[in-house]
Each structure stands twice: as C-alpha cells, then as structure tokens.
Image 1 (tube, rainbow, N blue to C red):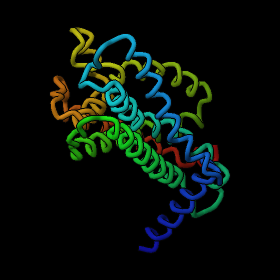
Image 2: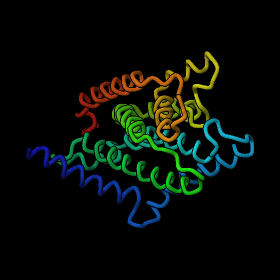
Image 3: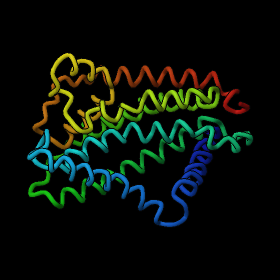
Image 4: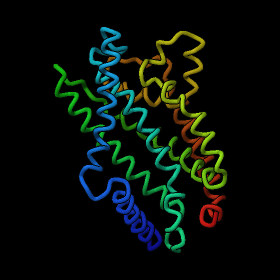
Length: 256
C-alpha cells in the first residue's frame, strides 16, 4: 500500500510538472491545444467542401473530418508524447523514487485528459451548428479510446527505449510512419475502397479504431470490415511487446 501511495504521489507530481512544461503558466498554452485541431478541421472542411457536395458519411463535412482527425489523435498524440517521455525527464530519473514508468504513466494520463477535453469542446461546438444532434454511443467511443490507449502505450514504451538507444531509429520511425495519417481513414471510409486496397488498409489497427469511433457518432454507419477482435488483439500484442522491451531496458533508460 505504501509503495502504491508513493507511486501515486510521484505520478501526480509529474503530471503537474508536465502541465507546466507543456502548456506554460499562461492560458494561451491550453488555448492552443484547442485551436490547433479546430483550425485543422475547419481548413479541411473548407477544402473538401469545395470539391464534393456531401461527405462520405452523413451530411456535415465538419463532423466527418472531426471524427476522423480526433479519432486518429486518440492514438497519434499519445504515441508522440509517450515516445519522448523518458528522454525529456532524464534528469528526474536520478531520484530513487522516480522510475522510467512514472514518466510514461504521467504523460499517458495527461494526454488522455487533454485529448478528451479537446474532443468534448470541439464536438460540442459542432453540435451547435447542426439541425439535429446525433445520438452518441458512448460504449463505442470508450472502446475506441481504450484500444487507442493500449496500442499507443505499447508503441510509446518501445519507442522510448529505441529513441534512447539508437538516434537513427527516431528518424527512420518518423519517415516510415509519416503516411499513417493518410492511410488510416481520416479523410475517407476504408470500407468503401475496392479490393485489394481495402484488404491492405484493414491490416492497419488505427483504421479500426477510427471506424469504431465513427460508429459512436454515426448510428447509421455499419463499418463493414471492422474487426473488434483484431483491433484489440493487435493492441494487446503491441502493448506486451512494448512493456517487455521497456522492462528489460530499465537500466539503459536510467543510465543511457
């Protein structure tokens, strides 16, 4: 119990530190976390609104791109933030009560809270512009968030080790994963693609996360090809692999 209490205090202290470092002590830092996704969604709505009469799903371009972009950010924002957690807090690891996993836990909690708050604010603003507010399936949204958290935690822990061990890996990872944004169904519905492209896209677990997230705001969306079991199997497998590498690299993370 004492160990758990100490762990909790350390994580809370690190969350406060991360908030101060990331957002600063001025409200503008928090405001930017909201303006960035809102501005991007507005820009994509304007571009695609001039190219097509209706979105691939529903009648609102802004809602369609919001579900795609924010669904993607549930995974991507966590991965980016977690991957540099240990390296950014290297100075704190000299303290005996601070372990590498504490930096991961603090950033995971903070990023989840930030993404959730941004999503609530953005969708609330969008709903005010719609003639009818969609029926929200909270179970699907929470399931998508859970899968994204498991997947991003596994990738983030693996990256946090590899970024410390191999400087070149970070550059290679950035290049290899750059097309992920375009291949995850942010701008389109993967299930509407023709074979074999659809089958290839369905190997990407983030596609399934976004599809599930969209079903939470589009009751009429059938998400053909969505595989609940595959999504969580990949997420858990990646988590186990990342946790294994992270656990056996604790000495490297502290002293590397």
